[in-house]
Amino acid sequence: MTRDEVRQAIVDILGDIAPDEDMSSLKDDVTLREQMDLDSMDFLDIVMELRKRFNVEVPESDYQELVSMTSCIQSLQPLLKDHQLAS
Image (cartoon, rainbow, N blue to C red; front, side, top):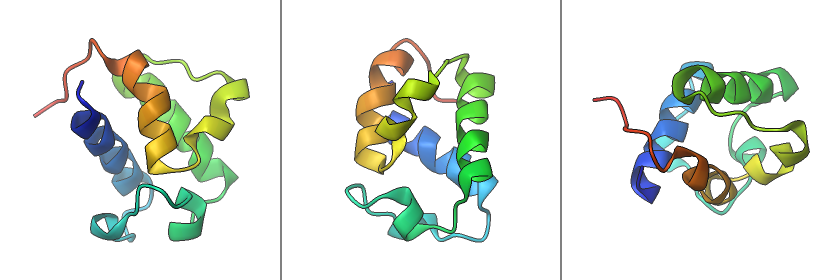
């Protein structure tokens, strides 16, 4: 997956978890919690969705790398490089 495809996959997951949030205004360099009403359970849902959709395991020790869109992309792109974004 390209950087843009990884970003779109993350946006899709966030949209499913927080359907009332405006995904078009997400800033890549601001923490997701500052921009969205996410709690710790929502965050775990994001990790679970990554596992379900892409068979990607994110170790608990790497959770802090998923705080912003930029850090999510940097962390997940190597793991998703061989995946295709569903149309």
